[in-house]
Image 1 (cartoon, helix red, strand yellow):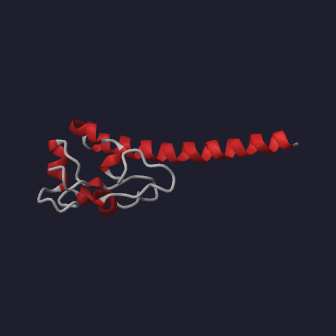
Image 2 (cartoon, one colour; image 1 turned 45 degrees about the vertical axis):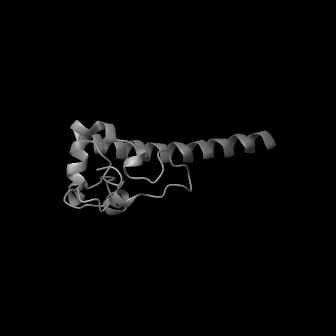
Length: 109
């Protein structure tokens, strides 16, 4: 009986972790599709404060805050933040993306 509970709890934990990973991968795929010439930016650190955030450490950077949450269908509206300068470094988000620099990091112009 105890073994069964441990197995069930392990399965639930694995499902929770995989769902978070899939959500992150989906956002990265959407970014890569929106900006095919900037696939190198299709990674966690483009929107998050840490390169590989763990549960509870998923703080977003300025670009991630501006981008916000996905719509009901799980899609992000990247175009709505292209003209903004989320990290206040004097370069628009779209120009940074085109140059391959991080639109959420003021040290990356």
